[in-house]
Amino acid sequence: MTDRFDPRPEHKFTFGLWTVGNPGRDAFGLPTRAPIAPPEIVALLADCGAYGVNLHDEDLIPFGSSAAERDRIVADFKQALADHGLRVPMATTNLFTQPVFKDGAFTSNDPAVRAYALQKTAAAIELGVELGAETYVFWGGREGTESNASKDHCESIKRFREAINWLTHYCVDRGYDLKFALEAKPNEPRCDIYLPTTGAMLGFIATLDHPDRVGVNPEVAHEVMAGLDFSHALAQAWEAGKLFHVDLNDQLGPRYDQDLRFGSANPKAAFWTVRFLESCGYQGMRHFDAHAYRSEDLDGVRDFAKGCMRTYVILKERAAAFDADPEVRDLLGEIRADDGSQADVLGVYSKEKADLLARRSFDVDRLGSKGLQLERLDQLAIEHLLGAR
Ligand code: DIG
Ligand code: MN
Ligand code: MN
Image 1: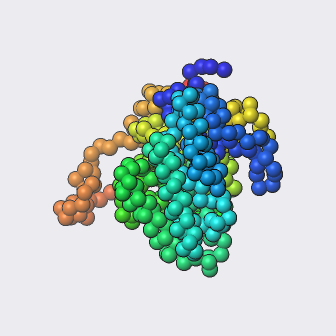
Image 2: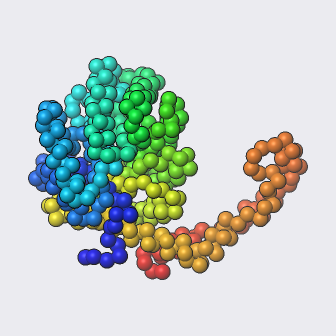
Image 3: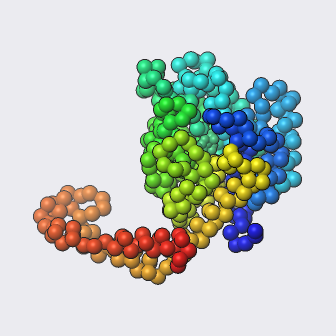
């Protein structure tokens, strides 16, 4: 199946090694697929039309590998990247699999664990830089609690800040212009994870030593797990100049993290996500942090990867058609009209404006009685989404 919805390099679609390499293990079942070596994953993603591949340190270099083994693995991986023309736009650290991190990494109560987490992350940053990564993601999957008695929450935030500051200073010191992207998630694997939403991360970034080097990596499933609208999270991050990366997938409401194929659960929400990313000017990667159903074999994994990308391209076309629809444009023109009648009191405060406003009367009954035509507008969106226009 080749058509106008095929992925192209300019789409900047990327996948983590851990996504198409997911072996189908879940909390209740053994793996259903054989492991795929990273060079084979590179070949598979290139064949599916991806632009790049991302990785945690341990996705490529098994935990406990010797320096010689590390160098050999990296050399083989680099050869595969060169052979298939894929890039490594993003790297990150696995601070969640090994038992040492069972009570967190940067927020662990044990200073030796916190120090080891910095050491592991610094080594993973070196790997990312060696592979050409421009963005470095931090997902604090274990930075949380089961019992709130276990951690001083203010101390935990301070420890997380200390770690991110330490690592940004490390990058400044080494001359790396890596952009850090913080990824929020409300829970799982911990009962509650600190800094649970993109909004919380944005507030945290403002307290850092180098806030200019730190942004966010919102993930669809994680905001939906928190009951939030993903396009609103994207907009707040973008408006703050902090949308450094994005993890696309899908999620059927607040439940365990499903990391479903993009657009497969809530195509209307995916429509708003694509419409925002394609209209706001975001030039970053479109990273699919998702995996195939446990039921699938390697052909099914390919179907999953191609489906993520095709759905994005289809929705990009549908969103452009919606915004080009004369009926939509006329309706939005009416709904968003500004007659300039309040320009003398809105905007930046002044004492004159306050005095003027205090003397102004408003016909609140007339203002409240207007029909806003939002049913008609949303129906137009639905009809474009369903291909009926
Ligand atoms: C989970 O959504 C997290 C980890 O997979 C990884 O650390 C990050 C990278 O996108 N997403
Ligand atoms: Mn997830
Ligand atoms: Mn993610």
